[in-house]
Length: 219
Image 1 (cartoon, one colour):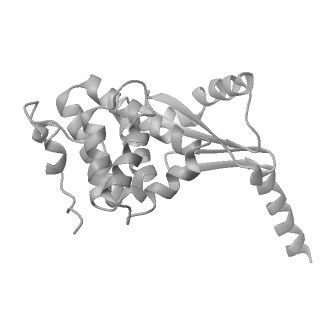
Image 2 (cartoon, helix red, strand yellow; image 1 turned 120 degrees about the horizontal axis):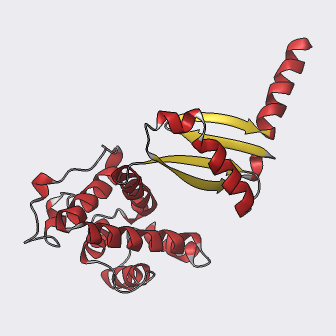
């Protein structure tokens, strides 16, 4: 039977460090993946900030690996809860060897628990949740800029400058803006800017949809 999820499973890797009761996640995350992410965050920060950053680096490396050329094979691995113990161990070793140096024990413990509970399919959501907590930890406001094609550095720099002088920055109450780029050919052109649950849609697709709506009303 799969092990039942509990934050205590992470305490094995942090025994002897600062009490986890004194450390809390900077924001509450929803869902099961959020619980795993929050527990890993608390376990890492209970040790020290360097460990927290090391775990962040480990998870970013796994995230990059999943998005790379070997991603399809690894996706098959993490989405299969029926793997044998030997195959699971082999797959985890591949995942955790993707970063610089040896993965932190907390990172290893996190993936071990995910595997034991048959929850490796939650890996990407867990990583996203952890990185979301790191954004809050650093006092950053994440702004996602989606374009139809990749933006060059000059364009990104101009967008960043414009955003810093906009209402988006004002709503951040002095926090640092963290620009995250995404590519979605479906928007056809222009930009879609997401921040704090708000969306500014300046895409060509949006303008075409509005035009079509007006034409339909006219008919």
